[in-house]
Length: 262
Image (cartoon, rainbow, N blue to C red; front, top):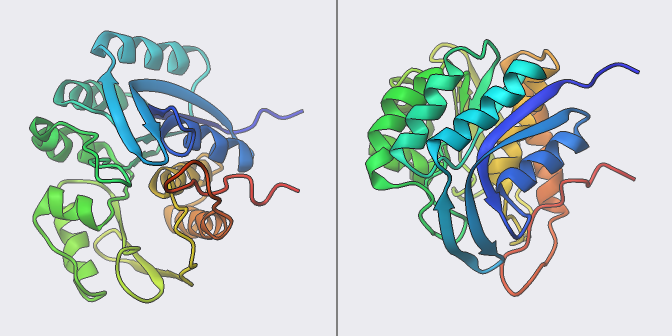
């Protein structure tokens, strides 16, 4: 039996299972890849929000990464919650030698508005992490945090993409899910533009959407898809996962990662 494509997530743990490492690994399994993990932080988190977060030491993150990459190898990497400037710089240095596509989800705040990255890490994300990205996948709040650009209409997405690309990723995927109307995203490398649209589903249970999308893109890249094809496939997958999102606890439930599995 052939070995499935190997995808590594470098992110925080979500104890509620809807986002972070847990969402990443569920996505990777659903999409036929072998998921591996480097845990950067542990959170106490549920459907109501984040009650606590504890970054791991840089030494522990570095050891996990080297253990996986040096023995098993990777065909794509996805980064999520990195918590501190030290961990951003540590992960960026590790990615420099990995030789595989990298999807950077520049996680700054949770679905509930809880901070997941220290303010002091902003410069490291801009100057160290984003230049390592094959694809960067900020939502509109993260665009504003990174660049100062406020997206209010679909027409603003181009300006946002240009601002993100100025930090060095090969491609920027600006996620317009917070705009009104259809869920529209813009993928561009500064020359080619790909507009991705999907109907908006009336379902508030969307916890883990960003993690899931970035992981699905990494899965496509690990399978050898070009960036536009990987992003389009990931958009289709996450749209189905949002439509099937379910209530869990007393707050916002997760998307359903296994919606395609009978």
